[in-house]
Length: 390
Ligand code: F3S
Image (cartoon, rainbow, N blue to C red; front, side, top):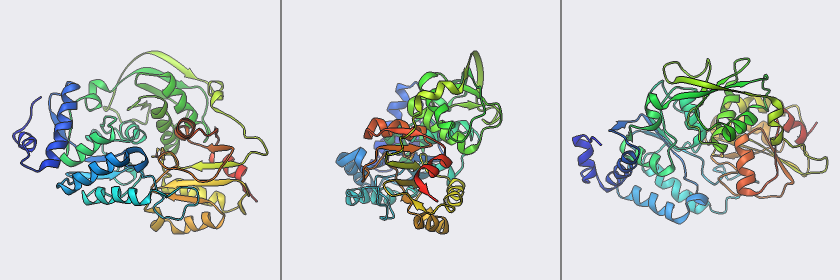
């Protein structure tokens, strides 16, 4: 791999041990993927920061990097952690707060922005064709497919290394030849609010190559957000081309195969909770966009309260605690639980429920797989109706 003089100096430790260690990781991975050089990135997004996932070894590594001079070389955001940063959620278990707060302190010491969210594009929307190094699969697909930027699906350590050096390897989805859609997937019905997550689950499970998706009508932004997240959970997509949405000249198409998704093909992901089952409603995987939270607060305002035995949990970025105070107040007055800078997949939950009802295909997948919940998918309107009383 070709390295510039500066990159060689970094490797030799001239800009400190943390940066040398980070660049070595990127060079090794790049070489194994056949990269010819390193390229500069404009934004790193670091995932894998939950104490429950990375434990003591991860905590130690982050503190060591921060203490040995590791500092962000580019704009860097961070994914949700395992605690509710408001400390007010009754559902998220904050018992490892002391450990998680040490991780957060190390991240902030390195100059990372304390966003604690999986929708980093809200804070800095990527530009067409700009190079990024993002962890968090839902955000990766959004960056490549909606914004037309270029990022590989980085693991936590690689995104961290990119943040500390400002570089990534020139391979994978950074190259136009690897952004070629090879199968046309037609959505054979007009999706409602609750259908996008289901389409994503099916797509991830059944289509391995990069697809080009065709909808009967323009899909909604919030719908695509759910679809991309679900597809990246059940499959390995980093790019899903959406006709008339993905910016031109950021992908190629060489598709001979054609598949149609019919509504009947999505039935296996659905389940109707029984009348006596206690329900945990969950919205916010990926974290709710301000527009989604605003709509929800409007919808919930006409209800009295969450019905006894049920709960409704929303996961949202930390800063809404300070910026969306009137919406949060409406929700809390009606017994809705709001968790800031976390989500039920990267944290532990308190309370027992027979079933989780969510609009998120990604949550459907992980809440069953990691926490053993029974999970069903519904639209936000159906969820609110099932959980709240007038
Ligand atoms: Fe975000 Fe947690 Fe879902 S990190 S994408 S809300 S699993």
